[in-house]
Image (cartoon, rainbow over all chains, first blue to last red; front, side, top):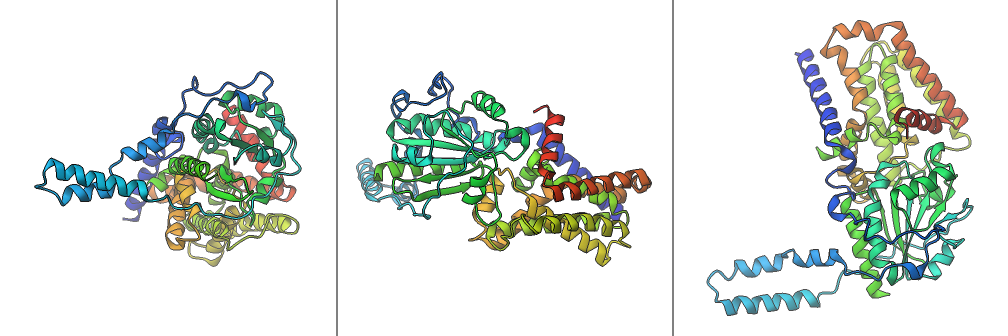
Length: 266
Length: 199
């Protein structure tokens, strides 16, 4: 009996491994690498020849597609209106829709919480893709700064790059800068030539801070934790307004919405 | 199920190998208590990873903690080797401590499901702890399957009990302890991963 149970566990476990390998888990259904959130490389701004990103080279902000997508989803109020008007005339339905629309447009979005004051970046080994030499300099020149701790060898970090590219394309011209703090886990990820090559291959055109010995990685994530990727949004008052771990699609959709909302407030 | 499969998908990732390699080695060494050691390793790793995320364990692996971690790493392999049976204190203790040590060392590359767990440990303690256990069972599945193997296919037990096979586990365990003590464990795993995958 025990043997058959063990055999069942063995077969099921092997099946799970095979299924995961065949499916190709690196772009799972909930990952930010989902193709629906990807940016067409042709739409992304080209990196400057000297790898320095100039603010004036950034494209104008595009219409945020995420907001459109949210608007298209029927909300519970719509459903309720339809459910309570089975015999209503077209005029009644139109009136109900109008009321719903008014209600939707007058409800302000939830305020975005202040999570605490942001730290700075110190003891860096340099910067790539920018002339800036400090986080303060970048913050001073922008309304919002998105700081992501990543490393090029991390599969989950790579999954987020399409979503970050989209964010960069849509908001760069509206005072949003991304800073990728490259904190290597392994020694081959610490070689600056490998970082430059990988960043070019991955299409990372925003400023990269080189945190080779992970001092900032650990200081920003206190309490003996350290996760890749982890993303923060810092507002003009140096306050953290967003802090999430992982490459989830929901996380990066929320990041987009947060940036959009904070820009309205700014 | 998604959480479990995300854990399974993380098996081939270098970040996870940091935790998986000692688990497999420990199962090879624990001849008389493979399943116990594997199960307790999963539980220990899940509990400590969760505790770190929830802020209940914030001891940094630096200073005096480094030789302590290395001594623990070496000790659990010795204890697991001499464990007298699956329900012995030495087997359960070695598995749990080794798992907790792995959870202490682990700095994960975080996918969507693990991200949701880590982001909500402070607000949904019981749920996230359960999900962490499920994730860890997936991430450490090779070690669990290796432990189940002799029970499912008794013919494999003789092979796994052979001294050279046990010695492989012991050598990996020794390398684990030594590289932990010298601060090069992550680098060793990273280099092996890079060579294996031509990254």
